[in-house]
Image (cartoon, rainbow, N blue to C red; front, side):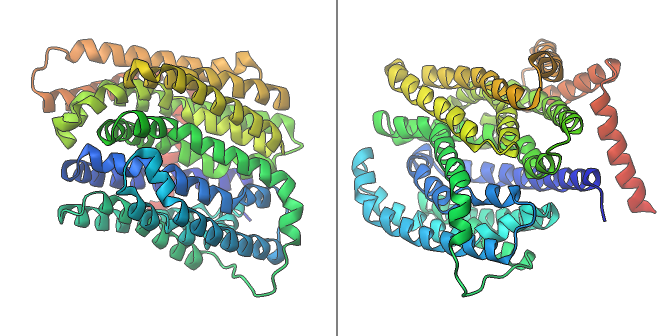
Length: 482
């Protein structure tokens, strides 16, 4: 039997590989799609993205988290969750099918009616995968999840680019989403040994519901928080403006999800297993926070540094307005993995209510702030959104400190040095390369100089997490050779 440490290390390794490959594929195909499609095409999809996200969150209903917190869930629990999700998913699709005209009226765009009814089919596809996904998540079968996710991303992107090349416009983006969910669902069934039965008993669902309903509400609010700008931009501005913002947000999201997705797949299962072992739990938390900070700050600040060059070279200057927005979003993107980690710590303590109210506060603050400042323009809205997300890290930490004893000074020691080092490195890189006139050379030079400088700073400072990462990679390579 593998130790918890070995399972965690393998989970992080496969989670990292999964996210790296998915984001690398997303980068390559995203460049192709950005060149082939217009900001208006992206805006059409961005305006309706929140609806399937909320529907899938509703059908999931927080049961993945609830099953993970059960020590040994059995067939009865998984079967109950499976059939509940299928029923709710079917009902949600039917509801949104008939609500499509209302959505189109809100955005003053009649073309959204058929697009909604087509794109929302992923709600049905996803409803068949929740129990299988929960089984793999609970048992730290990250390798299987990774293979399914990577294959689904590859297939969906190939289909999306092929349709975009054929002139299908925003329909290519909608189909891309459907293919991803469909392929991922099929592969999760293939990877999971668990299968449903026709003996349906909703008793376990009702027993988990008190906990999971709070996770459900939290998930819905997270979707609102992520899409609040898309919702308001689509109504008060235009599909073009919404598409430009969404392009910036997508690249920022791809970058920080490299870190967030890697750690998220192991955080809750590991910390749940360490419940009752306060010292080991605190040590594991601090190590994960240092790992997140070590990677996230240079990665996102670096993306902001090269945003203009990357956007123009990759998807042409028709997206230039997105570059300025992306530079601002990268500041909040650097702390988004910390948001997710701290919220998972709260959940691992069984405090879904705290998680709900903290997320609710962020959602309400986002909506009020955006409604108040939208007349000032898109850039002001993005600045406000970024500032609020930076502030909210401290709110999350306040609750984590009360639940685990992870003090403010410890948290600052685990995060602030990496943030300062990353900012200093990016500033030095900017001034050192400002004389370069060729945009392609400038992009390559800034990436190379920033990477070398950051590594040098970490070596000189004798950062322990760097040594641990290097040792882990060396051990893996050595084992493979022998």
